[in-house]
Length: 106
Image (cartoon, rainbow, N blue to C red; front, top):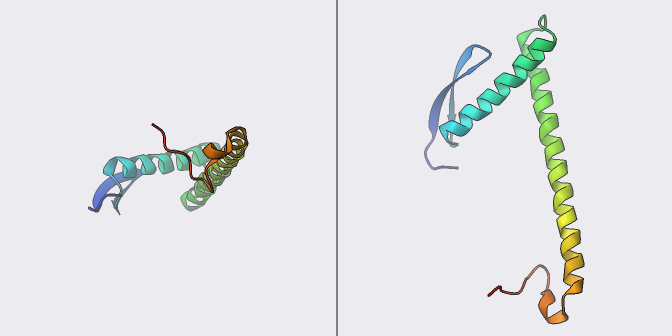
C-alpha cells in the first residue's frame, strides 16, 4: 500500500462512486470493474432480480472465488513444503540446514 490515500471515481452498474483507498487508482478501478462485471453477470442471468439482491449474489460469487483461490494456493504451498522436505532428505547432512535455513548460494 502507498502512504497517500487516493480518491477514485468509478462506475458500478451505472452508479457513480468515489472510492478513497490507500491502493493505487489503477487497482481501485480494476476492483470496481470486477464488481461491475460480477453484478452485470448476475443481472444477465435473471434480469428481473432487484439490484440489491444482484449485488449480494455477486458478492457471494466473488467470495466463493476468493476462498477457492486461497484453498488452491494453500494446496500449492503444502505441495512445495512436501517437495522441499523430500529434496532436503536427498542432500548431504551438511547441506540440509535446520528449520528452513538453507545454505547460502554463491
